Length: 220
Length: 219
Image 1: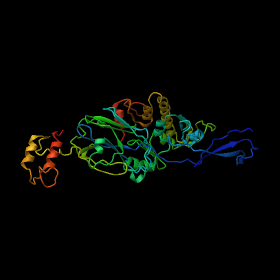
Image 2 (image 1 turned 120 degrees about the vertical axis):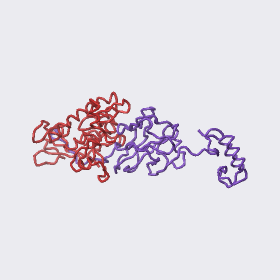
Image 3 (image 1 turned 90 degrees about the vertical axis):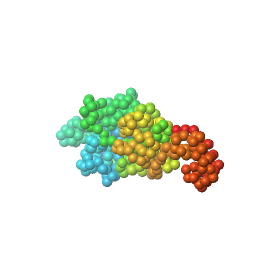
């Protein structure tokens, strides 16, 4: 498969551009797809531009993109899992997950979000899945009609937008954390425990109290 | 030519979508004998999630011993409801043991209390004395203790006895010694089942050879 990119041109004389109803012209580019998993792509091809569009990984430059943000840690990119997982719904036994599958909700017990039938392993990627891709050329100002943006993802619902912005802020911190401890960075976005530092994270930071940790246990 | 990007690019097709990862593997069962030479760690996927192949580079780690194992490569084939078996070479040599998917070092984890981690995806805190070491029982993730049921990635399940009977200890004293020799000589030439170590129907030189070969403590 390929990733198709539409470029809108204001040069009406461009011989290969197709007119569209707005009077501008556009041209379609078909570019090599990025990989979804570090280590599985073609290192001879740069897929950065497509990775920006589909939250992919460029093998050549060892860099992934999540909502447009550069993520150069393969472990962190895999943890974020921006594309979701396929899990046969009939095999899911957690009642909260079963309910969440139908409502595109999030299971706090399993820390799995469901949207469009797919399971998302981090809260951020579940929230981002509710949005649509935008670009820096779009009007990014928040408005009640179109919502706001998180990175390069437009989210219409204000409540989801606010939560996604918080989660995206955690991701930014996690990217910075990678220089010090890559697994801590992963645990920050996953609400997990770093096996090297033995630090458990909740919402991007260690729980303020044991009560807070107990209130949000992982199902496992 | 003047070209200006007025509006965004848009993607029509998501390339080679696999919707996969390795997040859903979790610890399922652990087993150890008393000296840690026979151990296994079993992981499992509880749902029909068939894309949990990407384990390469992920670690299984014991906090108590500091030992770790890194998966060398991704898994092949569908992973839904599958198991992964990591075990010591001592386990692999036992009758009834399914072939481990990966070999781990002896005493990989402590039976005196430990925290096992699989990457950042799963953590199992095991209390002191939770892991039985009487050679047959295993600790399950739900805290129950049952007869061990190791299962490997191809789906072969088995069960082991990590303390096989001490061959030659005819009198059950915990050692192969003069008492066993005396018992064997007393039954020489007969069909005495207890002294017929080889089970060939007669107590003879073959049985004496087994007793002498196992001379010493059964420990």
